[in-house]
Image (cartoon, rainbow, N blue to C red; front, side, top):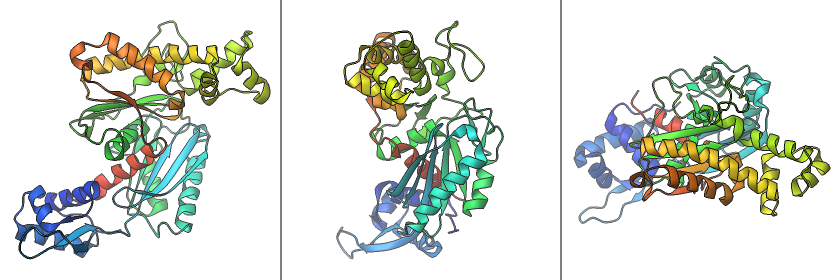
Length: 393
């Protein structure tokens, strides 16, 4: 493992080079607030560790031209985004550019041993493709609450067999590098902050809709995780006291009424009750319905599919309106596997938020779909581990 920075100045230099690309020593000195001589000492120390290299001559600022410096091009990080039904694994360089990305179906209910065998196999395929000899670190997202200080899932409702599993410890041994673990919605927020629609926003919420529903909350440029790591678990806010039972053991949770699984359940129930149309045709052909089927049917004009999306968007919009009233964010990002539902979903969410939240909070509030799609989570995972690797020991 490459040695990390030894002080806050070096850590800031590394993060500036990660986020903004190569820069001259003089330019870095201004951003780090160090004299040219002191900055040169810190950069030389980072070059000795192998984290930083020269990168050609900088543009002239008058007088003798200095060299640009950049993060070592051979540094590689692994980003892992585990969902309930699929996993994404990517290799990035130190500037978090995705060099290779694999995705495959999984069943998170099969347990951590089975899932991580698949994840490690995907990482091995990326290495075999020549994308990495080894990893300087790995970030991992899972679809449940995480005690981030230990890298351990805590009673995740849709992840039987995962409670207390030492994800960070197990993977760091298998990958021979540092590992950080977080909730998948937090990592989606980090990904959007680094390379997506939230690049210039310090305060925003990122709602991830998949088999479950979660929310990454960013305040002052930092993910807010709460005291124990459970902040943002909006899928288990009650929206109907007499509603559907939820995997968490409660009843009427948002997740039980609008998520990928809930959408598929309601679509099938409606068709089996006699509704005919595009969804009925799809069920007859395949024997099953998914959230993607609902999205496709809505796009084809199926009235049931459109109504299911509108109702779900209304419920989600009510919860997001509460977040907007409470947090006053500068942006709301909606992402995850169910965003294939597209602008019909977004319209329903916007209607509820703009209707229910105060005008001062919504007057200049964009509510948008994720730009990064399935790459948001893996980029966020790589951001998480570089935050750790590029911090003083």
